[in-house]
Image (cartoon, rainbow, N blue to C red; front, side, top):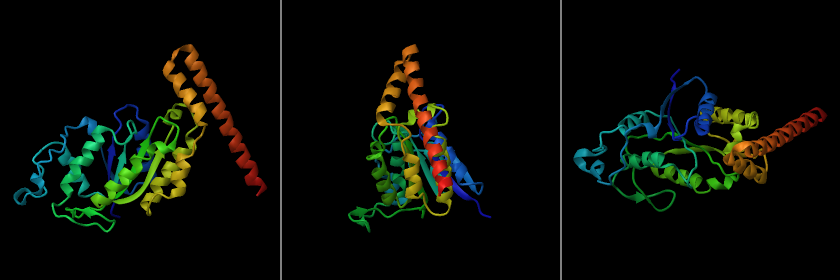
Length: 263
């Protein structure tokens, strides 16, 4: 059996990285029939796009004058069946290192201008690559609406680069990941998202299940604020809110179990 090839961009500069954990869970869900090349832009020597248009000129068409580490990513891209962008939401959209990768993909565009089937104008693509693309992201605010800039931006990028948008895996209130067990269900749904991707695309139901809050926005704000305050008082308040969330999670699980037996 031919193994599907995955190009994964892990864009979190933190270690350990919750966003990378999301990426790894998705890859796990995709199963064993994949070959993964994972890259960390912040650990690579990749210059910004110079806007010099050398890759558009006849003699150097499709070649970048910068011979840096982006060439390694481009080589993997030319073979990729799947393209996973995992990046935390810090300031509205992608971190600078990941945005830089997207800018360098300028090289896959040809200089000609043509009418886009989606409306407006687009460039024809080179290399004949049309991978299935998925966005994986987390943010520190509790509302999933904080992805309202990043999500449509990524869809726009996919359309203009000729990538097949195949879903998104988004988790807000990412600080809850520090509380044991609260995100266990989400982790299983992320694995399911990976399995769904292998047979088509991530379903809206799975995306919604992953994004479902596990505590109120008010409680999360208090917990996040207390955790940054630190000290005995901050830790005590953080633990108290976390315990309340765990209790409510168990209560919901017990209710679901009763309803399951009754049906």
